[in-house]
Length: 369
Length: 259
Figure 1 (cartoon, helix red, strand yellow):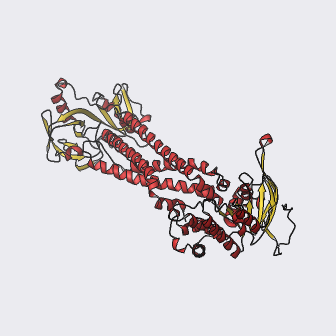
Figure 2: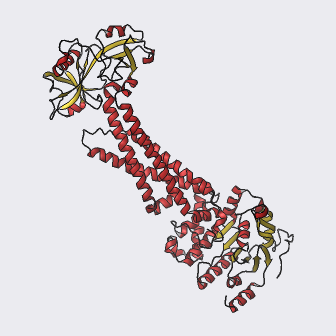
């Protein structure tokens, strides 16, 4: 006969408040986590899921693909550096298109359509990327394809049109969908929307680097005026990403700490309320360990229930939100949050064990409580 | 007033051999000039099958004494022996097992687990014993049913404490105290929360169960009318334990005096 389970079953009302409070915290944590994931994955996909192991920037770029600008000639310099297998020129242009209903902001990514280019999405879900044998056309982000700009449609930027030949997934940059085309088409679009570039050489923004096996970005000695960063370092340096991630994580961890405190306070009150009963049970021969493990088991049950309720509510909310809100409900985040919530709950309950061990069974006699 | 002498040595095989021996037990709380002695060199022998009462006013030391006998407190000096076991030598962990296996408690306010039924309250105590497994559970179930039947609670076995009257709750508490077939049953003011008629019923029931099962019982009370159901009376005043008078005479004089 397990007292903790019997109480959980028979006195459900007692646990409604704690489970409700924890469910709200889990809901908050998961919504923040989903928003964080949505922002992070939507903001970094173009780099994170790309074929480049590292990127070469101009020294003043501060980690931004858009802000960087390197001469095309840097390609041969980079390819002569020890450890670099291939350098692919990539241009990035934030602009708009009227090819989807209501128009859309997007990032046009131009790349040299060579064999196995470094720095293009490795996540082609339909069609193809522009290639050396057929450099025409554009592969668009799935978000654009979902808005009607699928294969066969035409992407128009500043009067320059190109047919959609492929769809890529998880390729957003700074929260915007991307369109991957040849460096020449990119240059035409850039001149069309920013006439001040007319007549200037087609300088790329960055170079995607494929490294020799066993070589990391730290091992590369770049040419003067060029900075090399790993793929991870690059997407974490995208403006706002690190700040977003750390701010949301701070709120999530604070919420989990609150969950632990809520459980600790709840069970401290429960133990206080049950002092007389616990004293009697200890007098009858129950050990502090047996009573304490019951409290921990109840905390475990309450947090697990809260995770189920909170996760269901967060998932439902995700279904109801419009598509343009970056809300990504990932199983990994759910499992991580669930484990942390249950751990916080159990740790909170463990704080009650000392209180239980200090209950003197002798106080059960004499009506002295 | 007769003072209980230091226990006389008795053969364990003798039918009169005490099962409980309290030998010059003292309990002092605190140290130095703040020390308070709650029990002074108390000695008593109680035989198997005997039901005795421990009488005394509030603060006299009766709860301290019964707590030491029940393994809830450790004496400052002196020995307590139950059967072959020297209770006063046991450590905290051993005392917990000792209480689960050898002592049944009936508390002043029953102290049943509020979310368990009457039957489950009995079964939970059985779960504190070392015996586990299906056979032990079946035996515990049969014993709980038998006890509830004897206590007139068979029909109420599935009720939680709040659905039981005060008397019924105290009867469940008696069943719980007897569930693990203890050698010693310690009863703390069992009538405190009951009216006189219900109190008498409960004490009569206690006596019957203790006698029928050959257990040893000690009842702490300040109600003189209840001592008539016990075999002997011990009185404790300011920590000094003495053997009292004849229980029937004491109860009669209390009734005459209108207590």
